[in-house]
Image 1 (cartoon, rainbow, N blue to C red):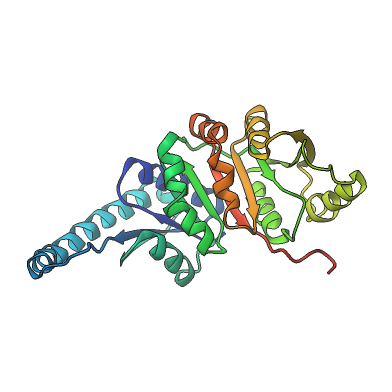
Image 2 (cartoon, rainbow, N blue to C red):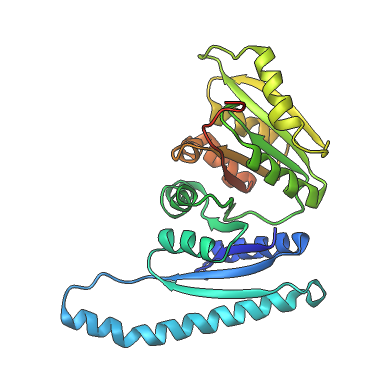
Length: 285
């Protein structure tokens, strides 16, 4: 992990995500790029256009000054860590700007904040979810009241389908930074036909447990009425510091947080969520 992209709008929520990104950068020896999406207002009349144009230059200057201060403040927190902090300003919608900047900057991960409770669901349905759907870059979503602490327990939720080699490898590299334990978890819905146990074990061994020499891992197969609720309960019981979701479906991340139980668990327990991507191609196909 060499570069972390962190969207910022100077709200408490985004400032909290920046603080988390800084600690992650310190552990990984990565640089940080702050990204501010400057909104372009909808204007109809000539007077509105002139009013916006007259304030635009001043607005950009103010944002630049704030980003300069934020960059210096982060760089000086622990000078011995020698973390490079840059910033970028782009005009447009955050949901479009963030993916574009992630690509142009070759970011290894995006760390962005989101509000808790009802705001958490709403944000995931807009900016965060849009970013996750548009990029292949890992996206780490930080709840508003989450306080950074070294990651010691990671819950990686899997549906035991598709190819998630890169997602697993990224998670293992992240775990290695903190010597964290990874609990690979699959929830089998009670209403579905449970997969053949032999196939489950084979998949777990080939695609999860034997992906590297890292051995601080375990595999758990649980049964429940709802997948999202099962993940929530398990993560809470394990006192997880991070929940990882790997999906090839655009709606999967939304479905996970569409359930009130999961939303409330993530909000109140302050658990960051890492969204990763996988492909539908089957192993050995």
